[in-house]
Length: 209
Image 1 (cartoon, helix red, strand yellow):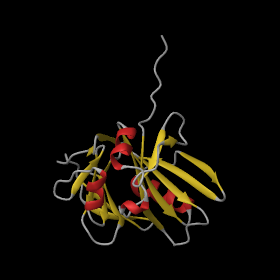
Image 2 (spheres, one colour):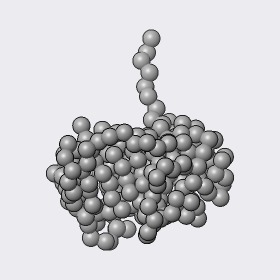
Image 3 (tube, rainbow, N blue to C red):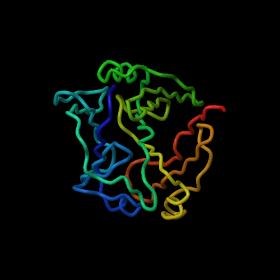
């Protein structure tokens, strides 16, 4: 299996701290995925994937670092709740099929499914051992190549986090596309510099009897 280890972001830590994240040496956690906010231009910069050897690669324009795995000393506390998991990372691309092929070739992650989201927008899904890649293509993406765009984290208590952040920072929780789950989006005015949303955890089916 292949595990996503970390995401590196530009921008300042202040807006994340105001949302409720805690950092150690510029690093915090979303589930078991570290994210590092180290200044510079806001946005998702690159990602690191667990590997037996250290090397760098390119996934259709996305800088990808392969590093030996290891425990990350950081907290996944988000205000009054905790981050259960990094639910998914969103990749924007001008050509979904090409980017999907690169993900499979470089990362070894086969395409799981394709979804028509309407109005010419298509979503393609690949899965790490610990999170999902959602590749989005459509007429709104005109820049050649793929880029890391945004992310969604599932939290233990979405209502507590929304109450802590306030309506000027987070939208009220509403039903997500996945049945039985709720989603809330952090508003751009919060200043994270990255599209970011939180969801309730996956609904697990229980055995009958």
